[in-house]
Length: 115
Length: 111
Image (cartoon, rainbow over all chains, first blue to last red; front, side, top):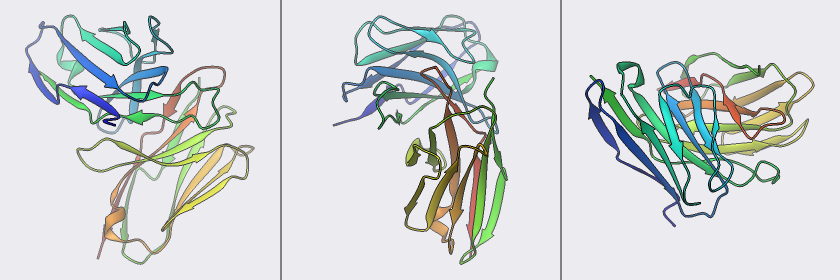
């Protein structure tokens, strides 16, 4: 089992460019999440999905869009990158929250720099 | 709005010493998680605390949860260099499918 994987691992963008980050999980999890991590700020939730075809906003959704067309994949898009989006992006997946053994499993991260 | 605060934010400790990291949260929640992150790496789950009074131990780390005080502690016993990492607590936001993470405690253990 690969667990949660993210593509790419590193990327440098110029202001105004667009890109898509891919997250894939092979644990048959219903829930998937996108976070960003900035120095001294912990993790902030960007968007999440509780099932195929569903998405919802987290605490920091501005400038991002997401899609969950297949259960195992969760895509994060930046339509017009800004320097403020320079960050490390983590994807996570989990069972539904109602499951008592719920916990989130994290991917290795994508380091994005916007110049 | 649920807020999660950790303290200290940075902790430098000598090998062999004991210390405690605190995680306070502002709204009732019955589940709390502790994660470890090594520099440049992803987050690794350490403990899942599911009820008031829950205590879990793994090696030199012990975590506890007091839901009435809205407080969790991560106690380090006889620290060793391998424990150097950043530790995050995370709390389930009631009636949602989300976690809110604390800002993290960066632990450095020196000889």
